[in-house]
Image (cartoon, rainbow, N blue to C red; front, side):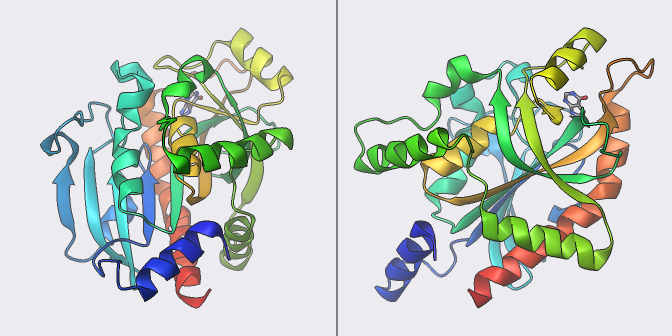
Length: 285
Ligand code: HPA
């Protein structure tokens, strides 16, 4: 059992956990908010109604928290997120994730639309992000970094371990559940390295060549800051990218945000199966 699960159970046994608090937090990326519609009678809170949070301005991002249940498990979802290309600092764009982390869930699933750099990928594939390369790195120190807190220091030690073996925080149990779900439901799910850029422009062909040479399998404009914050908060984390377009260096095809939304809405059904399977696993652990 992970540290955060143990922490949660200990709090619950001591009667310190409000039974309305969510066990699972989910970030729904571009075009992936369909899952939010399957939450029954949700409580909806717009980001900008919380002091210090900005409204979401990107198309396909509703900019709302929804609290309710999925597969009988209490969840909080972010339907849409904030991006650096909307003019937010890393600190500001991770605030919605910080709000969810403060609800002390056991686990976080972060999803995003992404361009496929790996030629073995196909449009519509789901990819578990088991490593990342951050071109937002210069600013990453600001993510959840209250260095005075003992929790932060413990997390820094964990993070040092994660960095030593070169892997970000990808929960292996959740990854296996995602792989089993894909096998059983008959959809493709791979593992890969995600490279984060600021956007909003898609990559030039020269940039695609560079990213592929660096070892990236996927490119996108989000996810890494949220995953870093969630892991610094000690939460079990799974990040999943949906390949909405191929970022193939020599392809003459261009990508638009509308193309990305169309594909991610279709692949969202598979993402929903993964989220439901992980939610169910939290009950049976
Ligand atoms: N590049 C960057 N971000 C993206 C892409 C892409 O090709 N597709 C979806 N998000």
